[in-house]
Length: 165
Image 1 (cartoon, rainbow, N blue to C red):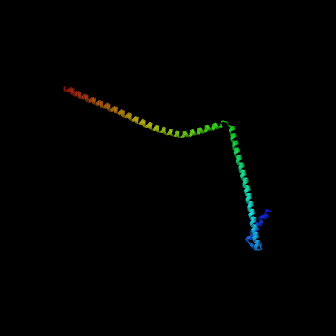
Image 2: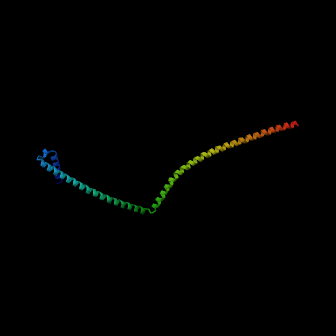
Image 3: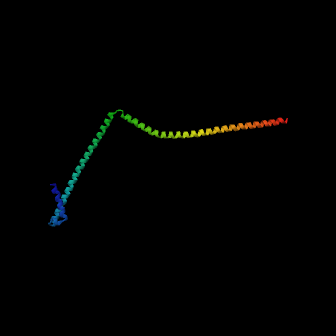
């Protein structure tokens, strides 16, 4: 029956486009085109109604799916809570460990950097200390030599003074 209903509008559309196929008068053509138009509009309305019915069914299904999804999520949470009562505590401690780990990373980098700076500064300090020790030794040598020379000069002067009397 539906096949006949679809064929009738098609035949009417063909008659409208090619009046020689349908034969007949202009009035019959107008009546058939009005009839084809009304059949076409009826079909469009029927399709639109079906579309709306399907859309409503889909939305109803989506609503049920959402409700079921929420219920399943709640059930999953309950199951997880039953599985390990200390799980929340463990999760909290793990999160705190992660936070402390994140805080340790920059501190560790800073520590390594400061240790490197310390080693460099200590090396420079030791070098300057060695240099100071060498300079102090050289100063002691110079002072000692100077004292010897002055003592020698004083003795010579003393001899010169003694020889005068």
